Length: 464
View 1: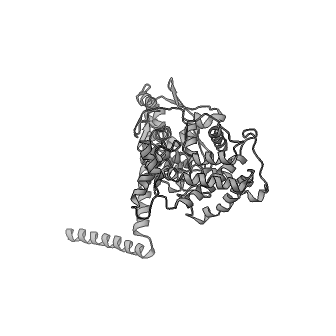
View 2 (view 1 turned 30 degrees about the horizontal axis):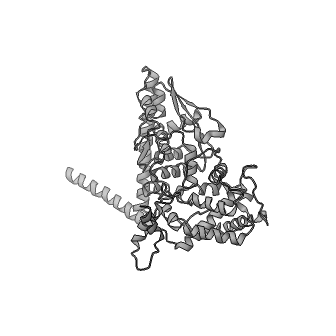
View 3 (view 1 turned 30 degrees about the vertical axis):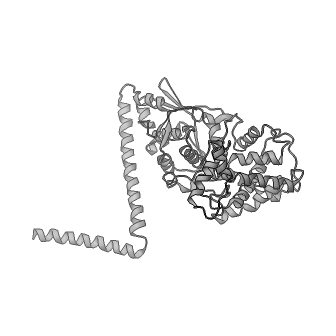
């Protein structure tokens, strides 16, 4: 089998071969690559059923990494010059920049099949152009990791020459780095992790020794505010953060469904006390999933809603729905939150007790839309909260007048919100499809007036 795979890898494509065969040969040639065999198609395009609910959450705003979004807007092109500066700075850390660059170029070019298989979709660039993208973006990311490294994390790091702050706007302006980090968490904005490790080994062999995998991973986790943890092999930045966040490995994967039948208000009416759990600030990204139900009290870690929260959560979910064999805990967590919220009254309750922490100016209506759409298009989940939801669904204290009053008020508000929602949707459809300009507005008004007059004429004719 190994000999057959090597034949696929070594065979050169000719112009006479059918184009549709190339992707097949690329995938077959990558099956024996130790860095790729478990992560083929790990940087997949986000499915349209997920993307359509918030397309902006999956598209970079300042920085493009990899071939998928390269050159799609002038804003993204503006960052290319700065990536070249970072690449030059990284090469200046080496003893022989020109020779090191040549060695990196040959190594990355030899990974062409593995890189293409990692994206799992058609890449329009030829081998040399794709290698150029991997080399530039890989050097940029590696230099960014080195500059943001905490003191003492990187031993024997060579200094670079010509370190002028004017050439490095990413670290020179505090408002730039959050946008860059957010763009680096997008599923479609990744490069394979083995590209970074290869460049690190070649360019800085005295710094990245036999612990290259762990050091590059720890630098990445530090950059995004995660604690250093031993992680299994990962495909890219987003996959690394995902592996460092989950707490329930090996849960049974099943078809996605809404397991929590009662929202926050109905749980309170059933006698359940909802309480915000105190979490360790240094490990908040992992402890957010640790939801417990003990003695009638539901302990929920605070869910911080910030400007980038939706982007992070949607891309983690997109990753889980794209790769087979990884935990689906973000998807299950989002489905649990979705079950807690069915009206603005639930939002008000969760905010008042500190379960939802709004770190930005966002309305309850926007939060309701966020929770209502975050799990649409999700096909798979795991059993992380199955037992918890079963206990919450069956729990019930004694019936009291207070419980009846809470439920009546809740259902009335929920019905009112549903009516307002459908009226707004109908109004948007009317404006978009039937009244896009003043002439169509006049036509619609005339048609309504004509309909009313015809109805009145029919009525009076029938009674005359």
